Length: 137
Image (tube, rainbow, N blue to C red; front, side):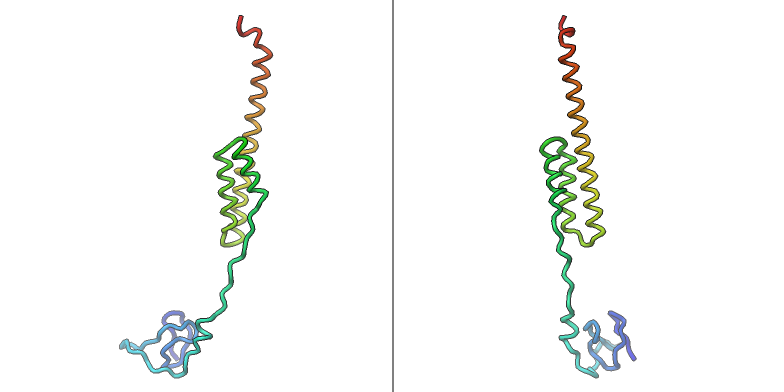
């Protein structure tokens, strides 16, 4: 009993092609041997392929990232937007979850940072207008 040099499957002596992967089986001198049994090309080459899972775009994360871009923190919002879009094209569930988690982290940081900036400006202007009568004298 011989073995396929490509996939390692056992093939009958004298076979030209492997019945598992379809690769050529050759003798030590390089010349192909005569086939013992015909290769069923339909079985070898028409194996069913599984289509990648169709993933949906996380609209909530996408909208949140766009709001962050427009209202407060452009760089962090862009990072959140990029990770949200990349999650749609992920090859597996683990990668998708990791990218959505990264997008959420960037969006949270952008939102909190924007809120802190707004609070800082409110405090600044309250003090500015409260003590403005003392500043110019």
